[in-house]
Length: 436
Ligand code: HEM
Image (cartoon, rainbow, N blue to C red):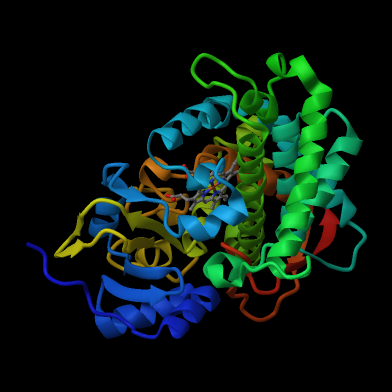
């Protein structure tokens, strides 16, 4: 028998605030005071948090029906029942089967040229500007890339309309809405949830119009929207609302995360010119084709190291649906469990000098899924991970091969909460020094 639950901080308000503001700092303090794992109670309920790889492994290896979606009820009004992020059981497995194939590593070449062209166009815009941020250019690239993957984007107008409405949804996705369901109250169309809903509704109407325009074309097209919309023997058709939830989730999960990662990678590289120099040598020796970037060891190691130091999602959460044993503890049904990447990625028994930016650590070894998990793990691991890595190496490689940038931030840039994700406090301020 396991013992009672682990000790931990008691204040709900302080825990909620700590997790929103600075999860890494808050978790580190809790581990120092109470040990790992510890129990905290935030507004979304009690959660047992761990960063220990042996416990993280138990979370990722748990049978799919034992651990479900954390805070599902409070996320439902924000993401909708058709979102893969909120599905469980057979529905989740079926939806993954539908979404995963076009995002599988073997399909990446299809997207490579678009990713490269998007990165080239993005940096051109900033050549004569006094400054821009890594987050701006990251968003320019990742939003266009995901929209083109979803829509096939045969017309600029279509892309421009969706770009604007997706940005609006994101701008209205306030963190507090995700962390405290009590803030999701309607008020004369003016409350944060009202404003988010109206932006989402607009995006939905655009999708509906586009689907109606396509009609039977969806059976011949190979963009994600058409793939998700058509019915096959394996994946029968769904109603429009579910389809819109599913597409909305891909737009949302598929660009903000990548944009932030691009910004962090620029930041670390320009803070550590030795690595930038070594990367330039690797890039100069390459043929500069989109698909070559995926095979370049140092470029890939740099992306992995940036994702280690700044996991965009600092803790991966699950709710206990069936009694679950986590090390010495029996976690009761209804409690949450969290694998905190922001702790594990800094575990000095796994990573030597964990605070250092040192891509070398990814050149000479690989890590277990419980030691390195910027994309989460187990049956819910990010379905877009291969797509994201492909995009990151192409975006960074393309820009740094053709342009020299300067980091304008003199002080250390720290992670701050954006919505579910954590991003760089200044956005990472840069300027183009020269074309190469
Ligand atoms: C650097 C970029 C990205 C990062 C760091 C990231 C991270 C994550 C994480 C941590 C999760 C939760 C995994 C878990 O619960 O174990 C997740 C889930 C997900 N991600 Fe990503 N992601 C990225 C890019 C993408 C892209 C490009 C797409 C789509 C093309 C995408 C689509 C999704 C979806 C649909 C889920 C839900 C999976 C499920 O519940 O089965 N992500 N992502």
